Length: 601
Image (cartoon, rainbow, N blue to C red; front, side):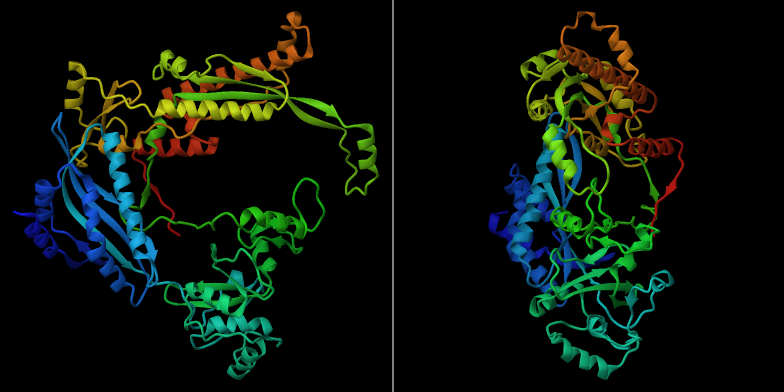
């Protein structure tokens, strides 16, 4: 088969079909693509799929966006082989959904998605130790139609929201609820929920707002156009989270509430935002100053220790506006997603590097004149600052798992193996510099990729007779899981027989845990017995600091050993004790076959 005829046959194999909830799916025939890959592109990798983006994908994406917005993703099926062991594996690469409309730059979006597929392939080959592409078995463009939220006919508010008396809900019978909710701000009647067409026509002329730029019922994505043409700002909220937020509020600003009953939606006007949110934040009935992005509250009473009042809100907005809006993501319903299971198998492995550290401070008295000047100023409280805590020194110790990291590597990368103490100026800055330097060296060690050492006869026999994955405990045969030889990429030693999915999960940490601890008051009595050779206060502080770090290391390493031996979890993977306890709860229920229902509402 020559190249021209192969391409022609390949192009003829593209067709549409309807599958499940997917509106359209673009598929390339398995046999033809496999044949072409083997004959013409073997060794070139998945980069071969990129040539289809302009001729076919762009056309179908643009046609799908004519009447509505869409979400689309790419899905690639491929076959790989490991030449040494002749192991064969079918692999699927896919991207997340991306939202697109008629005006989107589809070429740029497709470039990003193809790059993501190629990056996933590179990661798979790097982790899989010798996989080679044999064939591309399928390329799918999955397109989903989007049904955006939009306001329509009147809906009654839930009782708990209605009783707040913070929202005006106009009882309209048509699809113009967005217009009426905006115009309600100018309504001077006592009963603002009553609908009167002539009165709202009068309010529209009075407000000077142009509603011709948007459609009715109004979709949320059209609000931006309304804002731009009328020089106003609009925020839209639901019962769970903000739907549409402006970082900067104009002088003419509107807060709207969008209620939904799964069939239609309805806009309402929020007349008192503090009353609308207050009961969720506090039982206090006084008016609160609230950030409309994250619902952080600020009191009206002056306070030295935290932000308060309008000034506090202004300072808070400088940071809050840089963050994306949070979204409450609930579990999807369905048989496969009904229960929650332990999946953090990576956390069952001991982290090779952990740092234990501590600071020492000195109390520096404030100058007399400074104290006097401060005391003369009007004070909100009668508390005066007489001393300041200043960092004087620090100590840290890098704890290493020598079963994984050899002393030769520690020397090669110049990572300290003793407790390091620094006492002097800019201690905090020096500490940060030390941590960054050591973290970079540790990251370089984590990048080491030593090929697997040939298995012994005993290890190979254990691998061949293995029936279940040593990590997730699932049967290879019953769950159609492909078993692989897991090895340490730093030492090259074979570890165990696990499934393909767990092999992807187990990677080196992307962080270095650093633990701090305040030594308890009782330790002063221990140190007092050791000070006979100490000549200065600085040497006393160094001994105190060194003992603090040594005890912290000893206690926490014993705790890690206990957790790994009894719970098979390393607590250093977790930021908090509740997070560690939650993971073990999931792990325990998996072994006991107890099923925990997911929250779906």
